Length: 222
Image (cartoon, rainbow, N blue to C red; front, side, top):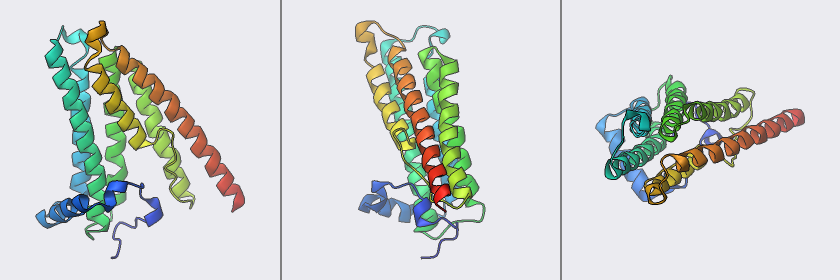
């Protein structure tokens, strides 16, 4: 099948779910509905901002929330993050396998993700009581993507190596958020999300350094 988005196979993030029957059926259904890959990409950004808002409203500065309300917001944030990731999966499938890509597809494939990354981690920062850390982690996530795209710009294959590539960051964040739902049991409020952000920050910094080193070495071999 032709690729109208000019997305080379080696430039797509390796996702195991892409080769499953359920993902193929949903992607085909989305293609039949007339929904475009760009619209799905925008939807991923909307879910990212929704997750950010749910994290933001758990911040203590907005008053004491009941245990159940805070837990519901956090679970809602996890669901929104997973929906964002599903959109990230299906926009590419509808574009490539469904043959519905557009010339401006590469922009919409990347830009909404960067907005979502910044928004989500900023929201987590407010929920943890350290907004500056949340913004910093969001900046690191954008930087990791920038290094990957810089490699592509100079003719290298996209490098999705971790230890904190996007799927790793989101998986670890969801795990930390789930644990945070129960931190009231030991009288904590936000500490779990703070620890989660610290670990993601360190892992993402290592990812940036690792990708940069691999990129420089690859360029020297050309």
